[in-house]
Amino acid sequence: MNTEPKLTDQHVAAHFEMQLSGYYSGKVLGPNGSSYFYSEDIPSLSWNHSVLADPSNSSHLNFIKDQAACRHRQPAFFVRESELKHVMLALGDKCSVAREQWMICSRDTLLETPILGELEVRFSKEAVPPDDYCYVLENLFEDNKLNDRFRNFYVPTLKRSTLKAGTSVSHAVGYVEGEPVTCGSVYRAGSFAGLYSVGSIASRQNRGYGRQVSLALSQSALNEGAGDIFLQCVIGNHVERLYSSIGYVSVEKPGLISI
Image (cartoon, rainbow, N blue to C red; front, side, top):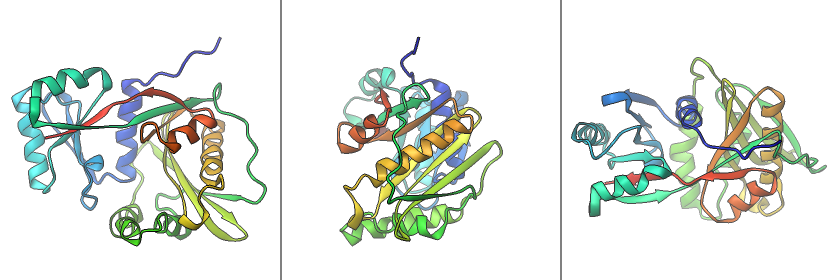
């Protein structure tokens, strides 16, 4: 009998540890098992915040503020959905929250949909993604100001990636007639896998390429021994529906609280 996927503390911990080989530059240990994960180059709060901290505890709150201040970041921390109400009540009007959708697929839920014949998917297991992967990330939007954000922050960070002990990665690029049009990555830590950075260049969107590269990466990770695969996405938009269409199940809506 199949069971519904569930987001565990082990999934959450695996995400943060895996991304020390991706977008995070490092972490600092704080009080009572808390940690602050940070990116030296990416200013987004998504890559600069504390984990397993209780901001209603003064030592935790001071730790978060100190780590954010020395990196010129806004204080922020990741909170599981079950704790959001408690934390926000404790902080009152001092805080705001951005929610995200976590989804999980397993061999039981992932669809066996064939890859589009026109799309050739190539994989790389080096820490640094190939140039064609970076090309896709730098051309995701029609607005060049948004593309510049990836060119100036995200791509340089990935080009300095090194795999931490116990972590592996599979980067994928999808080609149509030799042109790189879509990309994505799966990071692995033990039996856990996380799907990241899926996107297609602006001129080739809405053709199913992102869906297909997500499916190829997910199938590959499961075939290589992952127990399940998780991801994070915007709540309720077309991306969540895309992942649902290939077998990802919504499991939780944690929050990133900033003060």
